[in-house]
Length: 510
Image 1 (cartoon, one colour):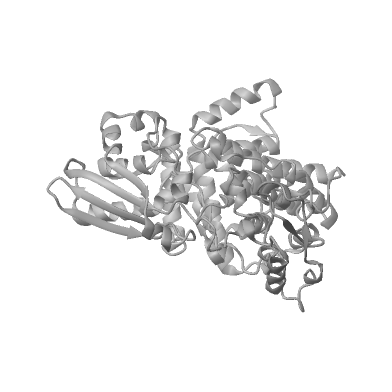
Image 2 (cartoon, helix red, strand yellow):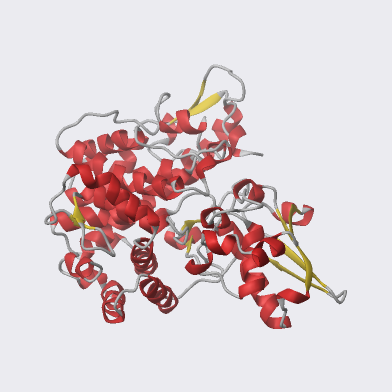
């Protein structure tokens, strides 16, 4: 059953109550189904959970470094290092030039504030967070939250680190915080963001919202509230401010607005905590209210994904977060991983390929919408281009997702040979996988086939810290960054809890 039908009637509410554990959860008694007006496709009931926002704020306020498992800390360091490297490489994108043009009239002084990584520029924390957030996401190369529900589209929840790390890093710089402080704030933000994204009805994403932009604001707000030492009341209000910033539409995929969504989300986290800290009021029940986030943005949600689930288990551990091996939409990665394997195992040459069939479930073409891309950004959301460039060039790094490469004659001709379709077998495998079935037909009549449910970098085939370090070095080289500085950053992040001042790290990235 689709989760959009979840809690549509009292039976659904009863099932949710069982999930919460009526005898144990202090929220269980508050959970009931409440009828709402039947209008079009809107859900006819909505779970009533008292003080859900307060519960979430309490998790943030009470979290201590010792509460975070060692495994989660190590996984977090990999994503942090990944994010820092992407901020460097993203500083070379056209978006940074345009952001500087936009900020010119503000006349910010060159000193003070927080670092824009990969540059000599320093800005007020909110604008530094925005610039770094755009840079991290501009190549669509950043980590991806993995869905757990059978009715969820695998990998289509949020890009978690980009919404949290820039906000936390900018705030930690301004507040003079340590690496340990940054780690606690980062983990609190990742956990809040991911659990909210997991809870909201799938309708949210399916109908066009970009959950990185909409759910990500809560992660940034949580991290900044933690670094500023806000209490439960003010953290709840920070969530209220953040919710009114929640924005992002998937129609903008393949344009500069997609990384803008991520930058806006992390900037909004800084803004939300700043305003709450000075006494700005906002709804203190913004998550659970009838006119609040879950109802307005999804129609309904699953409280069992949040209640007594924050840090239990930690999302980074279970179901895990995927770190990308290619700078393209994550749904392309199982197919790209498998195609590379087939090319290498069978010594396939592009000139020998008659055509390629790529079958997936129906949700994947719903996100990979550019079948005849004309720009590098569109190429990131084109299964056809991703297959074509691997066949032609044997790799797909940042240098391949450019307007010039996408419009090469040989690329366009190869794209015409790639058939991207919905395959019944992949559909049957379920949306909690990214099942991709490949069939290569060669000009000599031979066929070579393969299948992958997940790609490299996923929890089923994870990158080690050293693997991520190599990706970081590649991003640094792309940004023409000194290798000595890059290696120092790798060593510092590996032992981030021992860093007395996060500015030690950011100084190496400016």
